[in-house]
Length: 339
Image 1 (cartoon, one colour):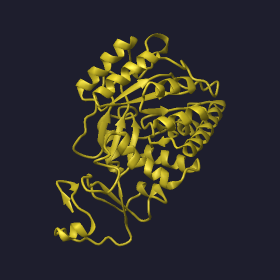
Image 2 (tube, helix red, strand yellow; image 1 turned 180 degrees about the vertical axis):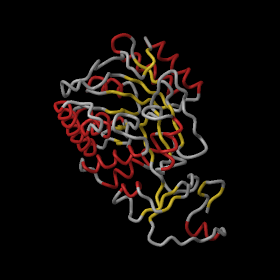
Image 3 (cartoon, helix red, strand yellow; image 1 turned 60 degrees about the vertical axis):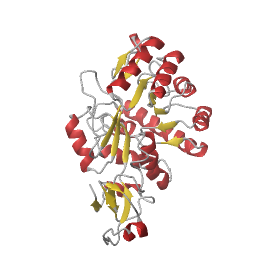
Image 4 (cartoon, one colour; image 1 turned 90 degrees about the vertical axis):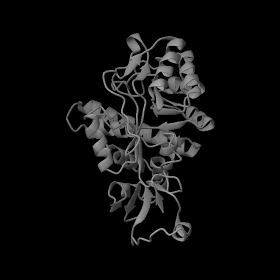
């Protein structure tokens, strides 16, 4: 039973309240999936990216940073909902990140977070390291670009405003610093150790391991990389898959995010490329499904609206031929949709 586009009642309660009965034999109903790490204004225009996500049946996306000259996406009334970080926050000087506003000192980070909260951003994004050093597998450019005081100030002011903090961080030093200072989610998280993963599990930190862009570079559709670089990207992907298996064993909260907009990761399709990569890593289909629905909704602060079929949820549902908990890629080819 629906009311104003939301689920008002289910099952016998809905029938008792006079809801019409509709038979859909052979279909499994599921909440629509979510991509928890995208860059809507990379690769294509903003509207084109949103249209692609809607066409693919994504319920929501988390936009984790764009250039200062671009507008912060707003989408609160139709799929996909957008939880946007605005311009990310990073270091000054040599360690400055191309997608972040350079900020210096704890007071500077506190002020920048307050500004984003006032602007209506739905999440705070920090860039705590640079890019992966593709010539030296296992190393990171600018491996600890921010100080503990800067991260702590950003986290404290974000939490005071009711916002989560998501941190681009690779390598043990930066990730350990971020989680010990209260970060809510680690993005990418390459080259970690078992002890850091265990600490993430202990603290309840979410992790979006973004395999799709690594595989995009390894496949290299535009021929941008040398054979040696493609081999390095493949090695990095294999290392990340092993980390993910360890993370599951240790109880880390994995959340599905594709880094859509990156090289080789189209918007909308990226979510399903990420699902496929997780399955190829040996993760259980039900975990992959959960990471793209219930867990992703929680990561975006939308647990009361998306990620499941329950009273109060938005009625953005997909009908698939098979149970998507056993094959989450069924969500890429629904036979029916409600939105």
